Length: 398
Image (cartoon, rainbow, N blue to C red; front, side):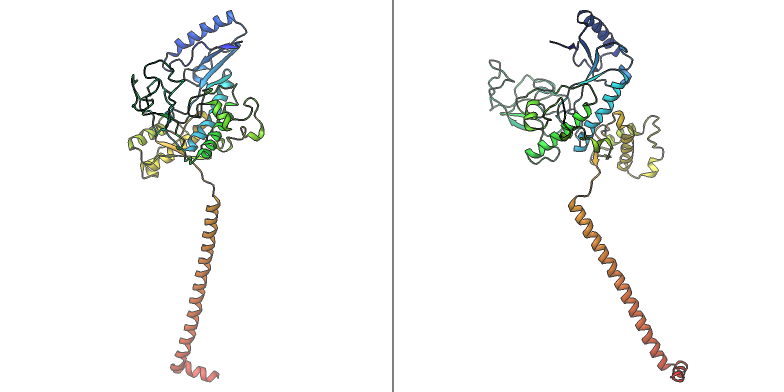
């Protein structure tokens, strides 16, 4: 039987907030009048912030906030970007829980790009997406996606994408369908892909554990694992019991590095200077006493160096408030490297080489010093032989 109701899913983020709150308030009273034991869930309309909801319905029983947290629409970044962003969500979830009401992460996935077919609608996509090179896989010809008896079915694998189209494109072409990339973070094979996916998943579960539960989107897909709960469970990306994590499954320790902020937020090299300028304006703009850019031009000679400093300073100052190392696509997170075994060997070899060089130099110096002494003594003796005074003195002593 139902335990609650959410009157509208994902209301438009530009809906006037007062109008939306009025709708929620009227809906709440109707639901409680008919089903007083039901929970009432309101979606944040992609405005997940204390400033929007902390005073709303304060003191009302049986309420919760639904938020949908995806990375599929994030700007392309590094592995560290996605790992850190996943762990950072705990700060916002905890803040909302403490300030107002229980939080449910009602939708999330392990998608890190916009490639999944029809993610933004049938034969459609958002402007500018996908913003990476998608992976292509064979489309199922007899497809539950496409159904049967409809125009264009069964799929003709000899044709390019067929209309009708939206404002963007996403669909089968010559028998191939787009799915999430499995090489964006240096994966070389299926093992690397599973390792990345599991690590990302554990970090998200760690973050969402401070809330009141979650729903993965979706239960299954026709192809591509990042949006398929069943596929991910079969491959071992989820704990065996998603309702009761065991210590050895590493959910509770998944964010140790990320929680310490052990990263550098740096400007991307190769991006347009206009993008860097906009990012720098954001980091240095306003009255932020945590980021003082007053003499940044005197301290750093290049735009990239200024952005490196400002982006890193801003991100570290505000990451627990939900700040990301993105700055309009002008920045990314870089892990602070720990020396690998090879690096340690190189370091040791370098140290030994330096030690040998030092002792060699010392030997050379001592050798030259000894030679200089010998030369000086020889010269002294020769001078003694040819100097009447010194020779006479020497002869007297003898």
